[in-house]
Image (cartoon, rainbow, N blue to C red; front, top):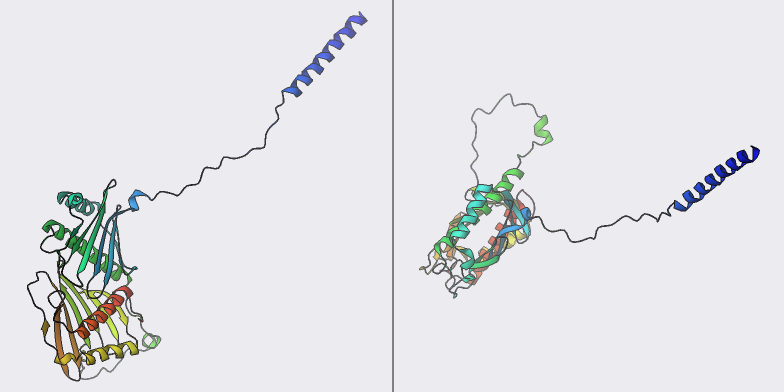
Length: 331
């Protein structure tokens, strides 16, 4: 009896030892955990913000460098010489209308360039369009291309210029603010005894008025320079920028008017025969005198005095700087 009991316990002990050994052998050896790092790559530009249409205007007497980019999501950005001058958005309906017009004029079947040449200082309008699979660039000379560019293409360029103008006007209206009162004005009590005879001040006429009109798009841009150096730019009557000329620059500008003998110039420099020509008109006032001179950009090339062309280029530079300023500041 004792032997059987002892034998039974031995079997139990041996079974437990065997179980422990087998469990220890089954325990896996774990390797250190190394997380998977995805391969890095350059993120793709979202289709919604990719440029759909790029419209550039370059050249001319003043060396214009303007660009309007319309993105696939309808955002519009306008720049001049690399500086942003406008930002806006067109809705899906209007954006779809632009695409439809490009399809109707068979944009991808157009020539790469429309220009008969022979026009110095011509302005060039370059349109780049991408439909997702194809990209094409078409350039139209404003004067040299007017007889050879398809009317539908010229009409589309006008649409793009209108969109650019709207984007610039949107930025201007959002940044323009009213002039705050000075502390003295805010603290001063209301006048209790107004003058018996109110005096209406006579607004001083500007020193210089510079206007750019005409062209395929029917431009109407104006720059006004006051006697104190203040400058104001407008487009189709809408304010687009204000700035101020330093005294030395204003003096140099007056010297240019004197050097060209402005009051002895002809009233107009234009040989004519150019449809949709652009005109630069300058009005200058000094010492009780006032005179306006108009120069056709293409029709006046061969007859305009070089000193007058240089003066127009300087006024165009000031106009561009004023439009880029948006709100008052020093140039």
